[in-house]
Image 1 (cartoon, one colour):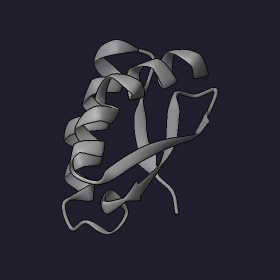
Image 2 (tube, rainbow, N blue to C red):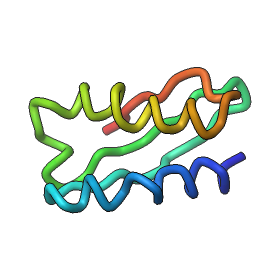
Image 3 (cartoon, rainbow, N blue to C red):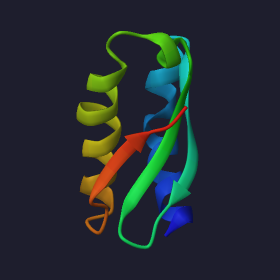
Length: 74
């Protein structure tokens, strides 16, 4: 499953990098929770919560239906 998540993240990574940020996969748990770390400009951006939910989480759930939620870790 980790490979599928990484491929899905790669599909949106260019959008994040265009704004000076990026996303790093930290962990995929057995119960469908994906932990990511927002880096660069995304790490301190006030819109990072929206990016996480409306961009990253939505994309991952569309591509991998077994994903339950995505959380950001420090």
